[in-house]
Image (cartoon, rainbow, N blue to C red; front, top):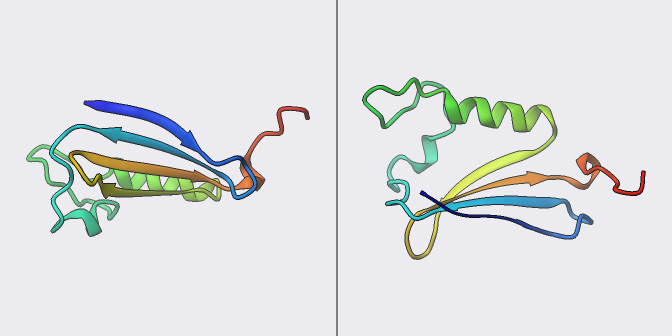
Length: 90
């Protein structure tokens, strides 16, 4: 279950969009490979969801990362660099 969606940063270094959940987190053994093509921990998974998310992010000069939270659950961070931000005045 999604616990929170928030942003961090003022724009000078870009903005992070952070999505956190309250699940069991990501097993430390599989965490390094979750963005690799065809990697899945699900019996009926294709292993393409996070691969495609990373590809889309990179095509827009952004990046996505995942980590376990210090208490419970996982955190996905989508970093948008300053040159990709829309100027609200322009």
